[in-house]
Image (cartoon, rainbow, N blue to C red; front, side):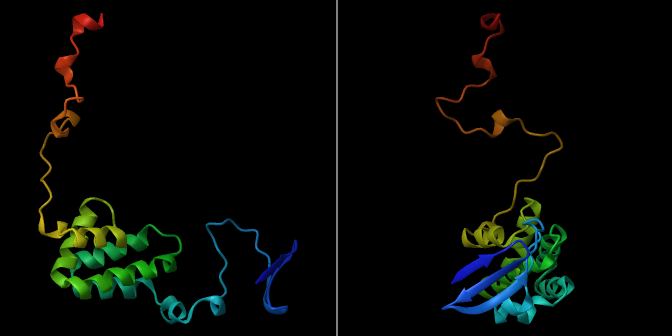
Amino acid sequence: MDVRATATTGEIRHAQERVALHVRSYGSQTNPVVAPEHRPRSHREYGDWPPERFISWGRTIGPHVGGLIESMFGSERHPELRYRSALGVIRLAKSYGAERADAACRRALEIKSPSYRSVQTILKHGLDRIALPLDSEEPQSAAQGAPAHEHVRGAEYFDKEEME
């Protein structure tokens, strides 16, 4: 493949034959320009689906699956960039079952990590079967949650008289 770019066009050639020619875009990298005919066939098949189709499909598996997929699309300016992740979450339900997938999505939402990778990791390690600790009325200090270790010193180590 050879790429030739001028100030106004971009050209791609393979074996001296032009494969594509497009007007050059100077938009930001966060707004890619993708011609539908350059997308893989599998992407074109679901590329025009509205996000609501994925959300309702997720809700048929469980309310938290639908909520997670909705959350994934809610944070994306270009929802089509989340289609594969949404389909991945739906596929996890086929592998692990609807009940476990819904529990994993609930956990991912609770820890504020609504992504395919989070749900996959939760299911892989069986964390969907373990309840999250309930938040108490008063926040825990860092020392309460710190592991016991000889190099971890608490407040009692520092005497106010020594500090002066």
